[in-house]
Image (cartoon, rainbow, N blue to C red; front, top):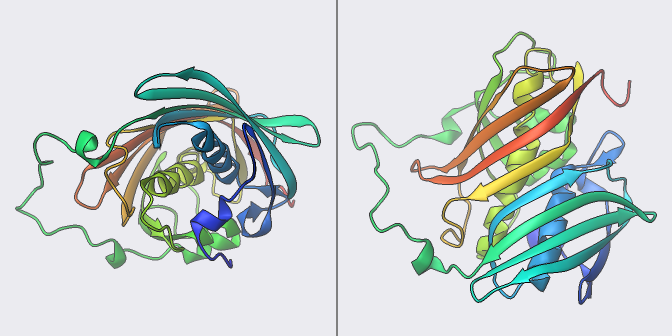
Length: 278
């Protein structure tokens, strides 16, 4: 995967609530574009409209799988306040809505985001060493878009064909491409990480290649937005509820390497047997 920076991948043409770009490239898997990327573009368009820079929370609904090609994005201002802004974003392909994204932004700088007391850190044990865990480079064969991340497995299948695991996963991840010093891009990395792996917890018992997990929605809420300029290593722990008629709800938490809670995410998905290319 060739990518100069995350900022470049999120660049949009347009202004005043109407944006667009051609999508695809390294953000694809099977015959579609990774939903976390289209969600990131929707959030980026909303940020262009918001007078406040910090993303507080978002809820995405994936209506159709995005395909490589032109993407149009419109943003509607729902509420503008002194310290908050709410917007509704819709992404279209060929005139059809494929994604909606509701966002809250706020005026929260580093001072406002900082906790009044330091986060407790367990000094009785050594700090976690993500690079001591096995690499997940093999996963890019299934999901080429994961080239945007360097990942390590804590509790995760050893191969795409492994079956019988529990309905939970744990991984370490950090950006494999430059993100610069924009806190918003650090949040986008967390959004991408959540959408990439939450539903893995649901299909793990079947095997990653035995089923296709389709995201119906994604909600992410940030704990201390605006505080972190660089994502660094992130720890994601996700678990899945019981499947009900092929529908499943998954939840996860993303923490920094020192244990600080960065974001909480949830996702509703639908499980289909087989892989898109089969």
